Amino acid sequence: MQPDEVLAVYPRSSVGLRGVMLTNTVGIVDADYYANAANDGNIRLSLHNIGPETFTAQAGDRIAQAIFTKYLLADGDDFAAGPERQGGHGHTGR
Image 1 (cartoon, rainbow, N blue to C red):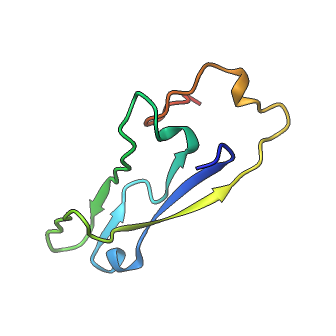
Image 2: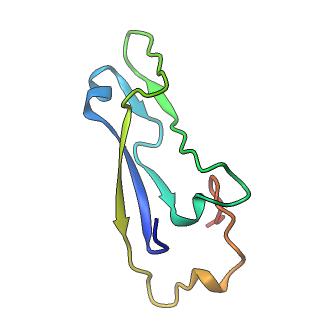
Image 3: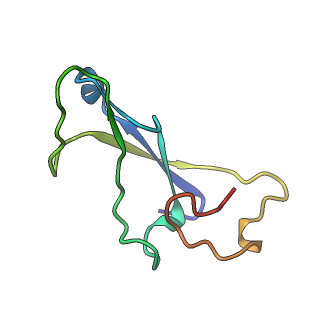
């Protein structure tokens, strides 16, 4: 992933038909999440079952899909000038 990209993670439509949704609806993964000392690079999903039947996810199930998206910084938004980013959940504190 490039420094000016994020990975947006969305639920697959077939999962929604089974009554399961991502807890935060859309996950955003920053470029610095991967390859840092704070994590192993895996992306984990938090699921919420709103359906009447038990849902069990297995390794390899197609639950989500992701799209790389470029973004622009606002004027004066120089993240490189701040403390070193370490990746992980809620890592920027902003």
